[in-house]
Length: 203
Image (cartoon, rainbow, N blue to C red; front, top):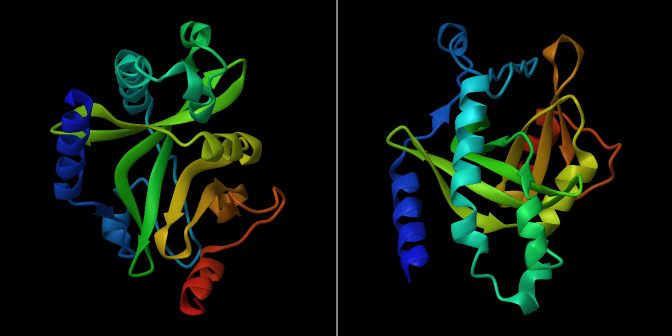
């Protein structure tokens, strides 16, 4: 009950947070980590201090999410046995975005890969409330595996398009041009933002 109450509190607080929309206005865009333009210019998603704080929260809070998982359903959460809990590490968080009125919008959340034996086994969802980072959810075993298989050195975020029920890895290519890799599609497939917007129009 305690974990359920904490999750509900965090969820309502997250909904109350106003997302940061990344405008096409050049003056405002100069201060944004993600700049949406016709060229789909993208700057780095996370700063070192931000990443360190998110990973610190993940390390300190993960046990409250995995400690009570029944042994018979451990595989549903990416674990083979409880002994693997001792070997958990984390990879760099994916900053999560979505689309709103054709703009890329930061969701004020991050997905943190839970790593065992150099594989993504699951994901933690981390949000920020009043300047503090909180783990809001744990799981997504299948998505974790897909992100592990598709990510590259150019990956700099995760775009969630709820209307399409699809996720896209955001990649910044040469010249900071944006490309999107469908997480549920072939590894070598790339689309641009205009393609995703057309998918929404044709839905």
